[in-house]
Image 1: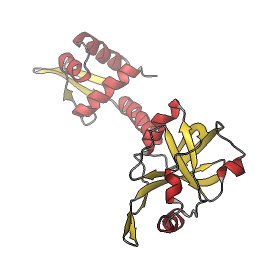
Image 2: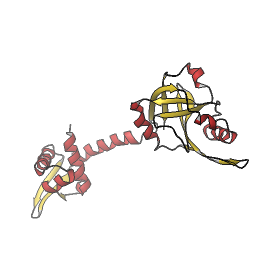
Image 3: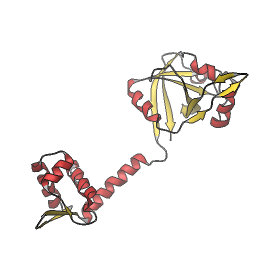
Image 4: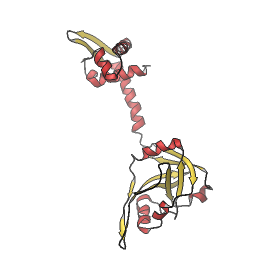
Length: 221
């Protein structure tokens, strides 16, 4: 098993071109690349050579290093692991928090036909006229931030009877198997630890929950 520090060094050599052939690498240049001391860089090169993950040869103008087939295989294993992390088709995110009474902002959206028709068409949800509001636990706030990088469904603004209505975004999710969506108004006054959901059913009733109840939201992408 290759040590983590040695793996970092091996990756640096590969990035310098060591997979394709011999590349000029000195302890000083490697130390600068990895922000370590030249002595530490030298020890890592010796460790990689002893493990037969690199070969080293000396030329008139310095040291040349090549990643061996065994070294390349270690890098491929690491690459495959990162692919499983970042390219999994069905990634599950879980947000945990407690049920609270809402500020009423989302209720505004589910009471206007121009929004309701878009929820039905784009999300497959004809929402109950009210929202389900969650105060996230501190541990879930960072997970909530990650959701911002996902592809949210655009709920477009519109004009009706000379009145302009702003847009919003929605992200499909579920609670205990009940389909719902996180609603993010275009202009919101909610802090980042508060989220508001819409669903076809009154979630408080079907889940049997009151303010303070702990709930888990699942987002699959």
